[in-house]
Image (cartoon, rainbow, N blue to C red; front, side):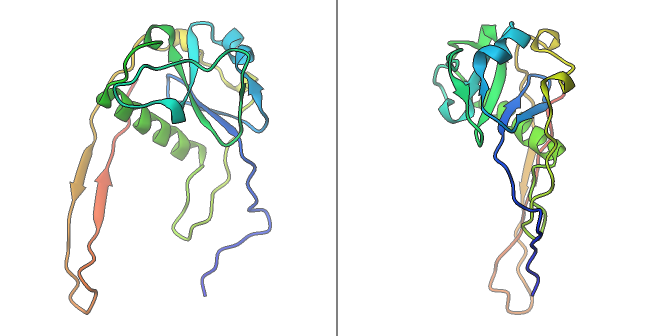
Length: 168
C-alpha cells in the first residue's frame, strides 16, 4: 500500500562539511581536522551541534577526528571566538539546508532518501581563501496559511515556507 523500499537504500553515514561558498563536502570515513586545515589554512572547523545563539563559536581541535553522521562548518578565522548572533545562525542554517538539498541528501514525498553525492578532497575546487571574510545574512520569507477543509478534514491546514539561499 505505497511502501517505498529498495534493495540499495542502505545509507552510510558521512562526515558533512559545509564550506563558506555553500558547497557540501562529504567523507564516508572519519577525517582528521588537521588534514582539512592543511587544505584550508584560513579557516577553522566547528561542529554544528556546539553552536548556540549568543554563544562563542569554538573550533574543533586540530587533533580531533570528525565523525560520520555529524555536520560541520568551515568558517573564516575572524569568526573564531565570536558570539554567534541569531541572524548569523539563521544564515548558516539556510546555507546548510541548501547544501544538503543540492547534494541530494533530501527525503522525497514517500520518505525515501535520494542518493547523495560524495566528494573527495580533489573534487573540492574552491578553498576558504577565495570566500568572503564574513558571513552575510540574508532573508527568506515564511508564509503561513490555514485553509479549512470542506469535507470532514478536521481543520488541519497547510503551512508553506518560502526560504531563499544567501548569495555569496
